Length: 428
Image 1 (cartoon, rainbow, N blue to C red):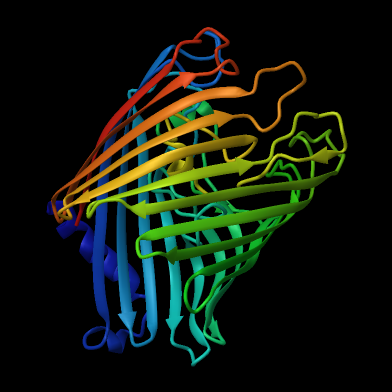
Image 2 (image 1 turned 90 degrees about the vertical axis):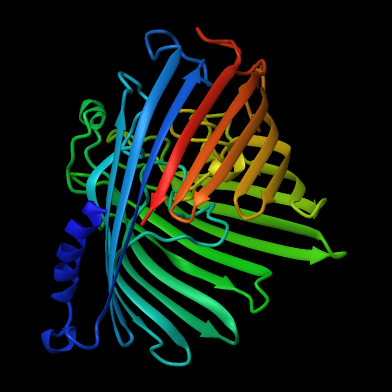
């Protein structure tokens, strides 16, 4: 616990400067928490076609993520500071290693929140924050991925006719450095947001929590420091959940996306193309035993097989995460929420509040391919076991096996992909 004894005074001092000095001794409540996750991953045969010149046949990685969070509460006021330190080791010359896995010693969150403003406004938050929204398919904090998304801006939580409605105006934070060698060496540089990239909208939840609706606008443009696809997208999500016949549960989320974008971020690409894309997730399941829930599911996201036309049909997942739909990310990489059709089965077994075992199967096709190309990517089997050794310590073991279909049996590694990982998470 030495690290806690060392860091707590520093965080308390930093947070204390945000509040009136005369109130510190009596009325301010401080809280400090954190976690450390260490994970080892190994992969044989990359999923997508590659040559020996691009990457090796096998890949091993050790990743570490430390989160340290301090909070100060004074009446309706809250001030929060959270530090993230995400690093990767043992992984040499892997082109898939990006700033989404490495983000060294970085302020992840620092915001001020005022709660219970009145009967309509529950909270106003200003600063840098990491946020989960609804299904997490459009905006989310990473759980499996080693680095976490953050946003600079303002967020307002309200209640209107018993609906919980959140409004937000964010500038997404870009992680630095981005150069491959600096990322591989765990070098650091301060992350920052850009006024040329904006993400804003509304998220509403019905009183019975069956309906969840998101309206999201995403706008970006080039600047001296920022090369973009000049995306100008409007995305609408409608998510509905229902329980029936005692132990049956269903969910469907439909997301439509429209607007304009360019086919690349090249400075010479000045052609705005129309965007028309959509995705659907649906599942139906039942509590088959006291401890096991089994469900059938399908994911469908549009793709594009014609780069020469004047339209983009590939769905853009924006700042969502995909691990819970398509399997592990990071070393395994897995599948994007774009250009995919993936029906499957999933079971989750919870035993005594200590064991959580997930087994999942997916059959995977491309939605669209070029004429004459194969579209079947394969069959994926995934297993994950979480063991809560004690309240502070959780062990996790998992893996995935991809029986490659004709679309992926190409390049220098046509054999099936084999992936395994083990991790521990310690919270304090």
